[in-house]
Length: 258
View (cartoon, rainbow, N blue to C red):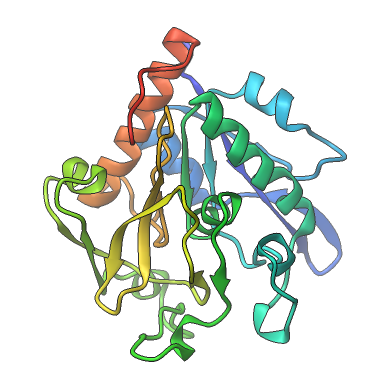
């Protein structure tokens, strides 16, 4: 029997500083294939190539991945500054309306890093371009040196709300994660529930209030070592279950928070 399809929101970049491609990291495709047990399909995020409507019909669920370009601040009412870094406006024009449409339809998705920020912005949140500049905040950025294993090491504690969907899923209110982001959610929109925070109060886990489907999103990178990390296994496993439920019934599931 064919596995359900998860569309992986790709990023645009250059190979050899010359050839533009749409791609997604191997950790993302492996996590979807091996832990969620779905078929990964990399999506070219350009509204001149694909539409939200056809993506929703052809894929059962979606993974909104991390990426170096940031959501453009115009999307949440702020002016562009040098601190905001680089952008991918084509991805903005696919990802943000797709998040909103999936949420209302009840079709499952998982947001990771930039994907977490896309979900937040899609429902009225603002972002701060440099979390480490805020009083009392730590530096959440990727270490500049080290092996891949050292860069993605579990070094950040995230605490979930008692009784919330993440605590229920993990079987605990505290987990260890990696941290590889510069931006972060500043003011959360009315429908965004911050369900997990780092020790310095930085939002690290959220879901969309009143959504009829799976909307769990995290600021860290659970795709790394997902086949062996218990936290990642539970997150991608639950996402895979939600995608299979959607694919099996082909209709809006019962109302749930996650």
